Structure formats: structure tokens, C-alpha cells
Length: 109
Image 1 (cartoon, rainbow, N blue to C red):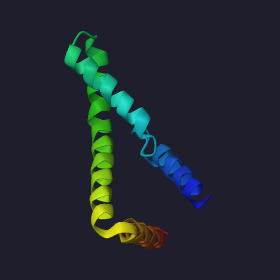
Image 2: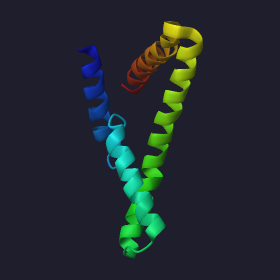
Image 3: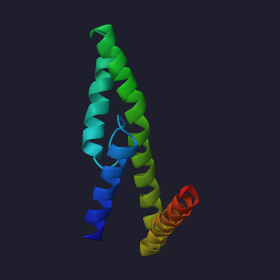
Image 4: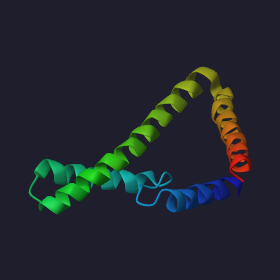
């Protein structure tokens, strides 16, 4: 249930703090949207305003997809070399992010 709560929190934060940006929790939707936008741009047969929207969405979605692929690759390499000890990196990064978030919010208050 902690994982479900974490995903719900992540989804809500992206929707509230980054309106108009792709979700960071739904890779399938992002991949499909990126593929459709790239196909639209490659075909170049759409209206200029539709091409501009596709270009903007692709520019925003590509880093999310690339970051996911890089994270999966890094996770696979770490798992291969360190086994379950590879979980120390994401757990410590999450702890650091939590600490920085608390420090940031107390400084802003």
C-alpha cells in the first residue's frame, strides 16, 4: 500500500505542479503519445497548428521516456552486478529527496 500511496502522490504532484507536462507514472501513455507525435512530424501532412502541437508534445515527452529508459538500464546493470544491494541507490535517493523536500518547505515557510 505504500507503493500505491507513493504512485498516487507522484501523479497528483505532477498534475498540480507541472500542468501540461506528461505524467511520470504512466509510461505506456507517454510512449504512445510520443510515437503518434513523431509519426505526425515525420509524415508532415498535418495542418501547421497540429504540427506545432505535436512538436511541443514530443519535446516535452521525449525526456520523460528517455529518463525512464536510462533508469531501467541503470537498474538492470546495478542488479546484474550487485543483486538486491542495488536497491540501496534508489532508496537512499528517495530518502535524500524527502530530506531536501522537508528542508525546502521549512525554509519557504
